[in-house]
Image (cartoon, rainbow, N blue to C red; front, side):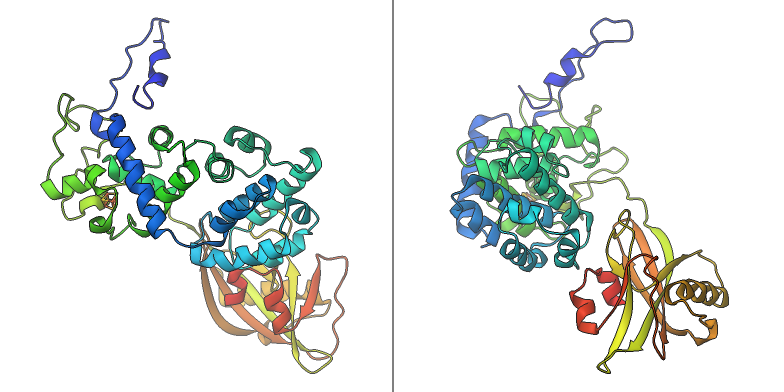
Length: 433
Ligand code: SF4
């Protein structure tokens, strides 16, 4: 049966009679020929064996004999790779695995240590959740990693469908597919899927397709090969179709070559009916885009604009070197538990005079002595884009003379040298500041 067809058979009409099942999408959106599936697997795996990048987590997935350590090693890499480039992750991964080579070691780490190592990698809740989940495996599962995608997703907090599939296939050889951003792009191009690729119906379809395609003898390699293809060949803007090992299976490439949908015998054509997977009639194929007509996504909501006033408070330390005050953020919300220069959110249209006064009041609570708004020196603005926030930091500085006693009743705070600042759990945004 074509992937996805079974779900439609059990629907009931409002009157209780079986509703007519929607027609399955045309064959160009399917992999229905077993010989083609076999050929695609062979071509993709042969290419992967020749061209795969040498990455530390891949080496561990092959050489680590202990199944729990192996699953943990893959898990860490998958969490770090979410939303982050491979090149950035490599160093972080090596340092992490050196410091916490096992689940047990990670379970004993403090959140502060985790945040320090994670600093600069972004999306900080990932590190925290990874550590909480490691504790759960050690305390509640006797240190044994679940071995299937279903159990991994059910038992480990922060492990979703993709991560579970990746760990189970790469570490434990379970023949289960994975769908991430790279796979979405490759599959949408291979099968000319032009409907909104972030819609639940299309995502379900792609999962079904990934499960049909995965090679049961080398599922981990197959999944990594599909993702590697998306990361290095079938890239978003200028895919290298000429070098692609699966171009003979690619409907988008054929469509680009022939300038129209390739003929598929004995099936209805797309675009004439209400095909739920084709490009929408309102935004048809654009020949100037070629294969990058696929995938299509609904327009993202623009990020929310926020302004924050922040002050770099500086004093002379006991050895004469300058020191800076950093304070800890709350343990929940954006950048939870990280350290920053004292900061306050601003309303968008505040005058600079008012901004200074609010910041001066805020600083006074930290250092326990009056701060003159006029004494704050405006340094400039720093812009940092979080996934959903366009953040502008209005940066001030203030030099303090004499000793300052910090109030221990407030949130944790401390004076740090520049080197200590860089070794602390601070975000990239604060390093820019
Ligand atoms: Fe992607 Fe081009 Fe390969 Fe098709 S032929 S899968 S569009 S790189």
